Amino acid sequence: MSSDCLFCKIAQGLLSTEFLMETDQLVAFRDLNPVAPTHLLVIPKKHIASLAALEPEDQALMGEIMLAIKELAQQEGLDDGFRVVANTGPDGGQSVHHLHFHLLGGRSLQWPPG
Image (cartoon, rainbow, N blue to C red; front, side, top):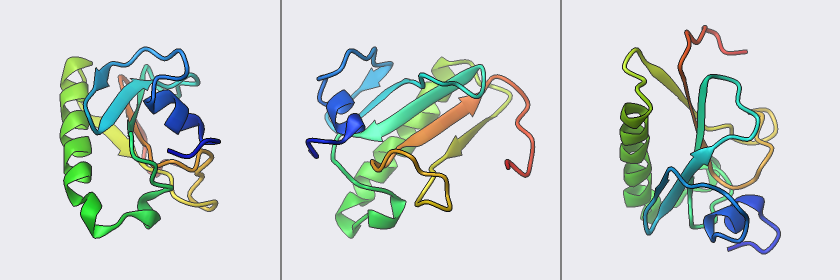
């Protein structure tokens, strides 16, 4: 855990956040500034700065996160589709330097995204 990381604090339950899912390895919650009718964040409890900082030992964790996203999409009724986004680095638009995945849905999402 990084003591100054917002998402580490959320993952450890130090901030008042309602979890939609929690396992030993991850938590999921609603984004405070949604850009779609459904906008969830899925984050590992382990502090990993971004996709670029992943190590081989994180392979099982990444699989668990992807399966959690699938389950959350089903729970949210996103039967017509959804988008998963992981902003990485400054040019990728990453603003919180803790690996996180945006699960977006509930409306038609256009391409290209922006």
